[in-house]
Image (cartoon, rainbow, N blue to C red; front, side, top):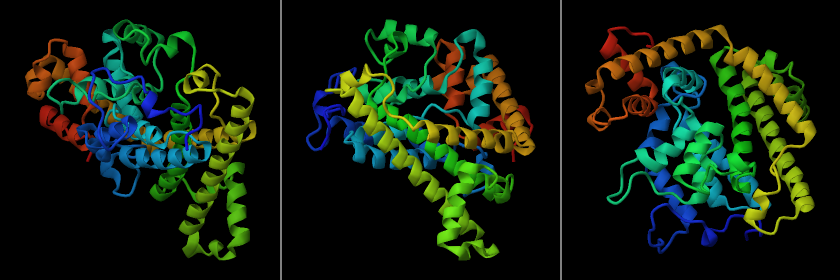
Length: 379
C-alpha cells in the first residue's frame, strides 16, 4: 500500500508524447521495462565504476552498480510506503549518460565541451531517455513519465536548468530554479546511490589489492561492524576467511545505513506530514541519514577518496583514459565521418561528438582510439 506522499502512477504528470496506457503495467513499470530494454542500459555492463573494464571481470560496472542501487532503493521504499516501481526505474536509469572510463571520462569530456555548453552526466542521462534512444516510430527517446525523468536529473547546473525550463516550462528542471525537491522516490535513489558506492568500492578496492583490509579497519565506521562480526563469528579471524570477514562487515554496515535512513525519514515525515507527493516536494529534503550516520559515512567516503580514488595506479589509468577521450574528441571533431552515420550527419557537431563518445563502452573507446591514432594506451 502506498502512503499519501508516494508517487501514484495513476496521478502521474504523464509523458511528453501521449500514449495509451499499457493494459497490464502501470506507468512506472512501463518506464522500467523500457529502460531495461534500451541500448544504453545494455552498454552499462561494459562501463566502469572505479576500475576500467579490462582490469578484471569481478569489479563493479555501471550495470551492477545500478542493480545494487535498485535493490537498496526498493528495500527502503517498501518500508516507507513509497513507490517501488518508480524507485527501480530511476535507479536503473540514473547512470545511462555516464561516459566510458567513469568520472575520468566525464571530466575529460566536460573539458572538451567547455566552449560548447559543457558536459554533465546527469543531463546526459536525460538526453539518452529523451532524445538519443531510437526505438519507437513516432518519437525520439523512451518517452518516460515525468516522475522517472525528474529522478534521473539528479543534478543540473543553473545554466542548463534555465535552458531546459525554456524548452519544457514547468518540467523536470524547474526545481533547480525554484529550490524545491524531487519526489521522495528520487530522493531515496540519491541516498541508495551513495550507500551502494561506499560499500562496493571497499569490496572492489580490497579485491584489487590497492587498499588492504587492515587500512579500512582504521576507519572507525568500518571497524565498528568488523568488531561486531568477529564477536559473533570468531572463526572469521582465520586468514583463509578474510574475504568472508570483509563481506560480513560490509553487510552489517549496509544494513545499519538502510535502517538509519528508514528511521530518520519516518521521523522527518511525521514532522513534515506531507499529504501528497507534491506537498512532499515542498518540504525540503526528507529522505536522509541521521546526523551521526551522515558524519560516519562521510568519513568513510573521505578514506576511499584519498586511499583508492587517488591511488597512484588509479590516477595513472585515469590519466590515460582522459587522453583517450580528449584525442577521440579531437579526431571526431575534425573528421566527423569517422563516427557512426547517425552522429556524423548531425549539424551540431561538438554535441554530436560528445553524445557519440558518452555512449561508448570502455573497450570500444579504447579500440576506437587505437584505430584512429595507432596508440594502445589501455590494454
